[in-house]
Length: 234
Length: 314
Image 1: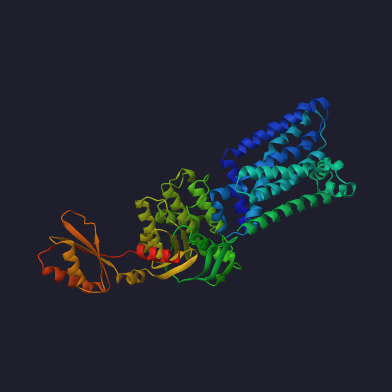
Image 2: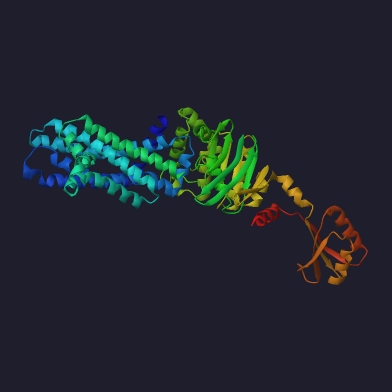
């Protein structure tokens, strides 16, 4: 437990030592801000529905950019060897890195809290969907970070890690919109695997154990896969 | 302290380390010597738990790999080849991170340890610098500080002096010798003089096999017997000198070589039991009116053992 905390804190601080953190956060705010506010006054609704409905797609590009360095950079520089020969287990490393990335994504969402505050000046905001939306966003971020972490563990090239991560996250995001291509028998399964519907449920303010279990399982599966890759590669 | 039995490592079909047996006792400095690609790094990586062995067993103190991986890792301080560190961190931050991970949680203890390490490794002036700004030698020192953080019983250093300038090499060797008084050290190198100067014992490894494993002095002694005598004479012809020298003993081998100066003739004499031979050569030449300009015994360095051993296997 202690080792996980030390690794997570170190990785989290690492983001802010280099300019990556500031660039990613600024870009994220510009992109989400633009998509949200460009249509906000046209609909005249005092809610964050549009912001949250776009989040899975923006996340599937931004999160792989955050996670791509986690393993790839270390393998490239060689510090991976230093890390593995210190008294830490594979699980400590994988979970520590995962927590750092998730925490960073949560930090990235903090400035967007100004949206509901701003909207509350123009109209009555229903707090349920907003709180649910943010809780869902954290779970979604966790799931995507786990995918990105796994992608990063596969290669020493950060660009390849980014592309694999994007592909994984994007597939989960758009899966339930591709249902008409699928045979009718497996539609229910595909719909369950897709991340979008689960996230939408939570962001409506309905916190259902099935959706929570879904996100927790995705996180578990990909952290475990990362662990297996680490085992296999040494 | 360390016991390696039948250690083998395959990379797909390629056998990098082939059935190695090694024992390192407490307080010993063992040099792992071998040409590039001989399997030194692979052996050390398995010893530190970074690679999984394909076969064989490793026992460190009373722990076995891989079951007691974490305990072994905390017993060993390891400096990987070319000291890979986190380039974006400051030296102090990096050492603090390492100290925390290695379980020095107490702030005061950490501080004391840093003072001690910066004294041993000469880090005090670079503590506040980013690692990416450091020269190779300084990075190497930070790497050694990393390895020594918890004052481990065993230090494993992979080519600690590669790529450094002669002054830095001397400094690093001093550090190794200082630590080596109390700790067990295993280090790899392909520089012979280095192994000769720092190690108690040398294991020569080639193509994944150990071809020699003995104390440094023993290895040298085994060569002593057939070392080379260089002789340069003035006032003699090659034929005359050759006949005279050949008459001394049938066990020696005489070879005419390029003289170092004009008007001289030079020979290389190889043979066993040198002391006797030298005095006999001297006495013989004394009888003539030739002048001895050079008369040296060239003590064969480890270089020769290394070359013979690593070539034979080829």
